[in-house]
Image (cartoon, rainbow, N blue to C red; front, top):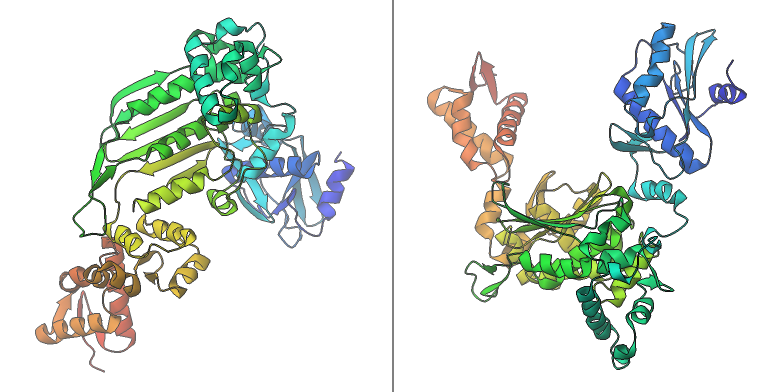
Length: 546
């Protein structure tokens, strides 16, 4: 018999983030069912309840309409295994209840809350709820669930059986030098400290016990097994312009030494700007050293070692560096970090982070990411690009001018706010903007055009001396194109669509692709037809006889 909770669910007057009603009158899409299973399971965990409910055969207004979904008993029971096969942790329904309501058959699917510390995925993707909407589970929510079992910092864990013999003498010597640089007031007394005393003071060991942090940063390569299942590995991969691998090298412990070795593998070539008078310098290194080290050391400090992944740096010959590490981006969004410009309130690996600060690898003032953005902005290069998805962080640094008009604009408008530059960087990369962002940029006269084809406005074009490109991007008003079509038809009596295309394609804005240009011409013809200017004659167009 259905539980008392089941009856409460059916009598509910409104949906919630742990109850979802679906009509499913004749059938129900299995993939959608799985996504809701995943979302409701995660939301039940976050709301602190034991289970959530997916109710089939009830419309949004809670009117019972009945469902024919899986009428056969054996088909309904097999649903549990089918769901378990595609859900992480092989979760399935607590139970499936059939209620024969006066207005039809209702199915109540009771879904367990995600296990402590283990957010649920459907076919490898996290789903959650925002009010009544189904969508990706946010990074913050993923981290909240995953952090439920983290009563201790993984990086502070003691490695049983490990000793000073597992640490590299070369790495300890380098650590001493970097510590002295970071703490100049203690440099004089540093030589008097034993290795044991130094490691304790640098927060690499705990009362002489070897921590996972000590193995990661200072351990010998053969001591890497001490931190299983973590993989203390840095990989450098060189790819050509077609994405084919040309060279690679892997580095293990000690990461303090390996990070520097990987840095030296990167071919930081010279970039020569196009001739632009006094606007740009003659040449610069493709990548600022601070940016390389900041991105690399952040990946080491903040990756989720319990996932067993590794840090990789992919160097592309077309002038890009991609840094990858496993683990969600705890702050949630890069924009939030830039705006706050302050230390984070929490870290995944607090002990490791503190040690890396003491060894001069990273800083805790919280301005590293913002500084990366400012360096790229001052070099007129594209801003760093963060991809935060599938429990992974990828940072792409571009070491060249991507759009000369964008570069000229930054050179001519040096006081442009970083928030505006971030939005304009999205424009040059042809990425989407929200309606609010579009209104903001248009209010300042920075962009023109219709979504999604925005381009540099006349105001910025005047600053960047890019009037010709501005005209090509903007195009002409519709009346101009209509006059051209009318002139063509009047001259020859009729015109095929292909003739009209030949006339207009080269005259339409450069920001439109071929498909968009074809759609634009179609709209022009339909508008002229509605205005009574032209009319179709079979596959031809002629001037209207009305």
